[in-house]
Image 1: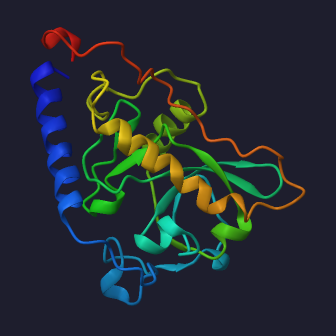
Image 2: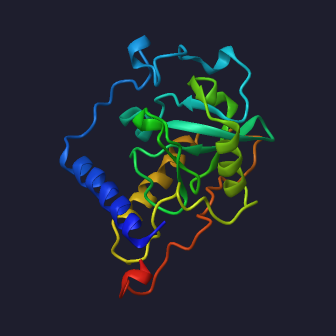
Length: 220
């Protein structure tokens, strides 16, 4: 991806970010799909996650149990089954443009499923996922790329599918990153007592820190 392309992508993301800041606070009504018109793609019916055996690649709409999930629909991609009936998950961004090098564009038409935050993985108990709704599955090739990055088997996402790097110390995407990490706080108290004792949120596989703003196009 060229510097010019990175600038265009960043401009598109900033437009979405600024528009969100100007809008009134979102409704706190349930984020659950209410009818067929609310389905992500208009093809397969949304069903309760308890009705099926979940597999890597499944996309689940989380139940509106926390501050974040009650304010907006939160979708997660199941990456890998873990111990204690837990799943390693990556949430989808609330924006349709990748914000950072750790976010992956899925090329889906439904806005809430266009970008996966592969840098922001965490474990969710099955008891949480079972209260959600299975909405779609992601393709095998996309799943492999995202899972390999999230699990540390690859160092970066494909340049054509990821966002631009975060360089400037005052970049608003730093605030966005912290906001996205806060999603996991919603589920800390719901973790089972016999599960892993520490709640871990995966750090970005890339270095978001910078000591100084870019001086030229090569530093973007």
